[in-house]
Length: 265
Image 1: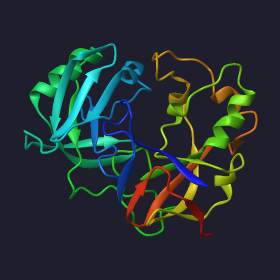
Image 2: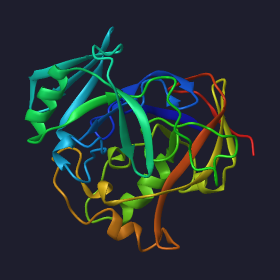
Image 3: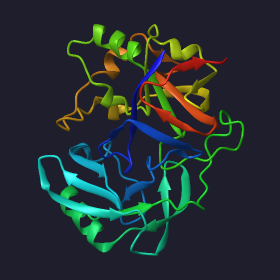
Image 4: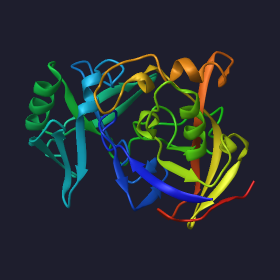
């Protein structure tokens, strides 16, 4: 088995970045979902509420992030890794309320104009702790602004199997994984308990329950009924539609595209 793709999503619910290598940390891959857009009350914003977020892309630069409109790349704003603002506010992501640092008025104004509503961009500082679900994360692991767990693994064969059942194929981007693995049978990841990639080790903690965000086409921001409609016919367990596996890090390291993936348990 081979690690074929590595993805990060620095700003929750904005475009992803494909990497050739990445550093694993407790909260996830470095820079993955360390930033989040919130409304005036500090409530997290995603494509579930604002599908047009799918049309805003992110690039890594030497000193920070470049956030830009996919339809007009010359329309962009810059986000330094070290926030200009030092204001700390409370933000809410699902049931968690945590401290975050605002980035800058300029970035807030740019995002507000793009999304047509007043929003702010916040960053999770290193000292902020947000615990993954203790029912599954057995070692008190922290997570960034990702929905629930630091890493998401999906096999290419699982997507290929899904696409063989769909009226029109969908891309892996619908599911926003960190790691895509090739050389397996469909849904082999359901059976794994721990894996090694490069010099990093991971524990598979639970299947990932999928939401309506997967029905938004990341290329157009248009909503549909697939792939959830089809997934529900064969991947629905206890009223949850499962695709991919939530993962925590057991030993940190560097992972590279092309690394061998070994199932250790």
